[in-house]
Length: 314
Image 1 (spheres, rainbow, N blue to C red):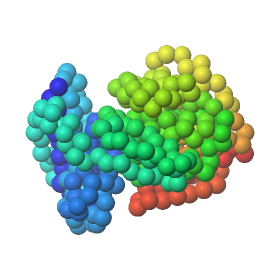
Image 2: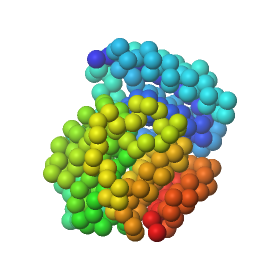
Image 3: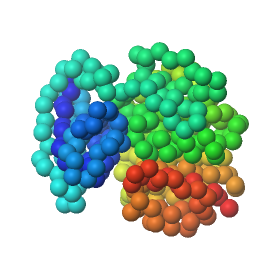
């Protein structure tokens, strides 16, 4: 399959917003090029005013025209807030795209125990380390974005062994896999994108966690903010009220706000929600929406502009 590369050159602050947009439309098939001699999803040492190139890769198939149009519309809206020029596009063959990913994705340690390892690298874990193997660029959530890292670190402190976990917007499945490896009794991972569901299922199988992780198409209902295609296309009877000890939601702030009632309804008394995907300026609105549903903050962590909240149902 050929790929359409869409690239935007902008400053460090705007690049984070562009990267978030690109991740949603390309299922995580994105890259960032900075002047520093390293590759990090979260823009490394780039500072405001430094040129950063953010790239998205879309498969050249029947779905390309509408997806490209929506992505470019999103860029137009962002350009009202940030200095974002017109995107540059070029077509790449499969080998060109795959090799670019292998050059830029490397082993990464997160928190006290989690190690993200590309599938083509060998690694012998130390005692107590948890290795998660991923094929990068397949879906959002390689562990290289601040929001994913914040969630992984929070899980180390707030996941109780044997607990039931719900992962809303699983992407690559990285959080669901980590939850299983950290001792969860069972994990239900949902995603609105069928491609992401397929990717997550493959990653779950590759990491040997199929016995405790179930991946399904769908998500929680959230009114007008959640597009129609986000609604489950099958009956998710596993989403009974009050079932989960821990819910993970690493997604856009407006969606977290819109599904707040559903989060509270699915959580057991005393259960916790780890919410990420929001930037500092969105934090107050997210906290207010969660508080209104009886979900009270017990921990807050931040990396650059990105914030993760741990809330508890009381």
